[in-house]
Structures are given as C-alpha cells and as structure tokens.
Image 1 (cartoon, rainbow, N blue to C red):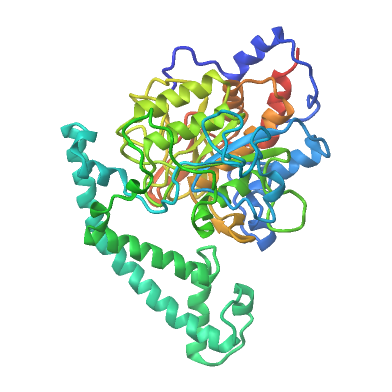
Image 2 (cartoon, rainbow, N blue to C red):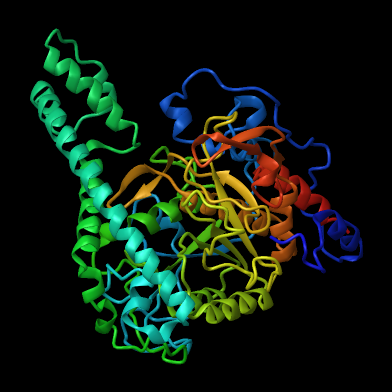
Amino acid sequence: MNSFKPFYISAFAILVLSSCSTQKQAYNFSKFTPITAPLNVTKKAALKENELKRWSHLDIQKDTIPGMSVDRAYAELIKNNKGEKVIVGIIDSGGDIEHEDLQSVVWTNAKEIAGNGIDDDNNGYIDDIHGWNFLGDIVKENLEYERILKDKNLADETTYLAAKAENDKEIKEASTKKGQYDQMVAVLKDADAVITSTLKKDDYTIEEVKAIATTDANVEKAKATIQRFFSFGMPIKNLKETLQGEIDKADATLSGENLKNNYRQVLGDNPNDITDTKYGNSNVMGPDKKETLHGTHVAGIVAQERNNKIGGDGVANNVAIMTVRAVPDGDEYDKDIALAIRYAVDNGAKVINGSFGKAFSPHKEWVFEAIKYAESKDVLIVHAAGNSSKNIDLFDNFPNDSEDKKTEIADNLITIGALNFEYGNKVVATFSNFGKLNVDVFAPGVKIYATTPDNSYRYLQGTSMASPNVAGVAALIRSYFPKLTASQVKHILMDSGVAITTDVIVGGNANDVRPFAELSQSGKMVNAYNALLMASKLSKK
C-alpha cells in the first residue's frame, strides 16, 4: 500500500527473481494479450438484468463494463480446468452454510468429529466442523467509540475526546437520518399498498410494475414511486426491512440505548485479554440465520457454484469457504478479529476476506500481530477500504497494515476500493473510501448479485462486496499457480489491473473530480484475465 516502503518489490522485479524458481509451469498463457481499458468511452444503454447480475464478471473491452473479465478468463484461459483447492476464510457475520448455492463449497474440518464435544484435532476449538463462531449468541454490538466512552481505560485522552466528538456527530446525524427514513417508509408504504391492491399480490417484480396499464392517476404515481424504490437493488419487502433497521439504529443512538448495553457479557470472556480464548461456539450461522445476510453474500461472491443455472456465479471455481463469525451488527472487537485471523491461518486458509472496518481500534497491536502471523504462514488478507467517501491516507480506518499510514508492517494485506458499473467519470462508487497510499486497487462493489440466507439472492453494495470479488481472483491465482507467495499474489492483483487514466467523480460530489490514478496506489481496477496472465509469467522457471 505504501510507496515509501523500502523493500517494495513490484511484480516485474519478482519476474526477474522467479527465473531462479524450481516451480513447474502448469499453465502457459503467453500467447494471450493483456486487457487495457478503452479511453473516453461510456456505455450508453442501460444494463439488462442478465448483464447487471454478473456485471462484475464482464469485460471492459468487449462489454464496455468495468468488470474483472472473469467470464473471459474462464472462456479463454481456464476453460474446464481446475487447479488445486484453495481454502478461503470469510471473517464476517457468519454464513448460511445450508444455502443451495454454497453447500458444495463449505469447508469441513476433516480432523474433527462432529458433535462429540471433544477437541479432536487439539486446535483449541471443540467441534469446529465448518469454522468457529467468536460471537456466540451475540448479534448486536456497540460501536467502538461507544465502548471507549463507557471505559476510558481503553484509550488515551486524545482518543477519548475523538470518540466523544464522534458520538456527538452520530447523535446529530441520527436525528436527520431518522426523519429521512421515516419519510421514505411512509411514501413506500402508501405506494406499496396501491401496487399490492392493483396486482392483488404483495410480492412483485419491477417488470410486473412496469407492465401495469392504467389511467388512474394514483396508480400511475405509485407505479413511478415503486420503480424508484426498486433502484435500491432489492425486493420491496427487503427494502422495508432495511429501512426499518436503519430507523431502529437511529432510535438506539438518539435514546442512548447503545451506551447502556453490555452485549459482550453473555460470552463470559474478557475482551481486553488476548490470552482469554476459551469462548464462542461452533455454530457458524449464529443464533439467527437471517443475521448472516452480509457474510452469506460475501461468501457467495467468492464461491457460489458456477454454471448451475441458479442464482449467480462465484469468481473462483475450486475453493472451500471457511466461515469465521466475528463481525456483529455494530463494531467488531480487535480481539475477535485477531483470533479469527489466527484461526483461519492455522486451519489452512490461503486467502482471508475481511469485509469490515471501524474508525477506532483500542487493541490494534493484536490485529497487527495477527497480520504478521498470517504473513509468516504465507496467507493473503483481502480487506475492504470502507464506505465513508473518505481519504484514508488522512482518516483512520481499521484494520490496516500501517501504524503511521506510510510504512507497512507486512506485505500480505491488500485494501480494496469499490467501483460502479458505469464506466466513465462515475466509475468510482459514491461511498468508497480512497487513498493514494492506503488503498491498493479498486474492484466492482455496486449492485453485486449473490447468495443471501434461506436460498435467496440479492443485490448488495459496498467495499464489502468489492473485497470478496478480489478475494475470488486471489483464490484463482493461488489455485492455478500455488507456488506463488501471498506477497506475489498481492502485487499481481495490483500490477496486472486495468489502468483508468481519466478523471473521475469522487464521493458522489460532481464538483470533486480527480484523476483515478490518485485514488489508490496502483491506479487500477482488478482484472482476473490479466492477473492470470501475469501469474503465468511469474511462475515460469
């Protein structure tokens, strides 16, 4: 991430070094030409539904869509081949391991006997058949600044005052957000009632709404309103639930409820003692499968079964998903993240996805040590850059791999910004964080279609979605070229990407226009096709 790092080794330098390697060349893609971005071209036509559902897999040259050329990589390079199986650790909210599109890719700990109450493999975790749940039955949690306000021992005076300022800002914003969400819910409720009555069904698609023929002004108004709400990328029922969830969060902030609650006490551990590891359980779906929405979606982006004619397709075709539940509805604990990384590493993960983040990290040193530990075991960590439209060269965003935002502590963590499906000056997602030093590369993160609990599928967006897109490409590289190191894979992802050399709108602010190259260290967007080409070159004798 850092151009000041003294021992930075580019992929091209690695190419020179790799000439001394004894690795066998399994796949030779030398006859293929790397993909470059067409300049000053914008796709005029709206994406069709089948295009939108897999836009992150499409190709910038052939489709004029800023996808990762995954489909092209399979068609021209991978074809029907399968490399070595790669374990991908998903540190998240848990996952629906019973999902129809994920069952075949769920990691199973072959050294553990299910349900016998014994730690058969002596790894410290009893009956961890498909991963580990560091949250036990916790679903909601405090934000980190709230925990600091409740316990001043967690931070120095400067950090405490920053936490207090954050709380004051959140209270002010919660009041505004609550008003906006209340208004949206009221408008949505009225329009939904009209459409439900017209169609005589309460579960309908946007196509059915568009097909309504009417001369009734109320129905026509409701029709237009509901179509706008469908632009959020989810069924109306799910949108209602999401909006109500945001209202509930605003209410909890305004009432001070979060500051009163101690959600952690049910676990019985000391969150400020990294040596206190005997907590959690083996239920990686947690107490409520519906609450695994985020983690299930992330897992699907990486690995939902390809070409089975249901749902979407994952990026990687030969992976096992290890579910590590450590991210609640609220801010994750540093202790849980540090132990989750170590768990994934010790149980064979070669790629770890981390679609989470926060602005305060009282025990960041524990996470730093876990990242270094993963590096020592040759494990790549792919991390989301965050969704605050901020320059994280200037603002804190944890976890990261630099104490001063300049010098990396390790070379195995890659941080991902999010792209929109509109190629042109709107290609950067309005919410995505950025940073010339602390964001490494960009990838698709708007309206990504993937698995959600109970055999369902939804569009979600965020750098949380961009990160597993990259984790999927990393898994492809590690599958077909297993001798390449985590550091090499990181730099392949950065160096082989497609460069965008034009100016783009940042943070959704039309007045903030900058060169795309200034928003990340690489100035590129990840491309699976190019990454495999470069990996092939680096793996030659």
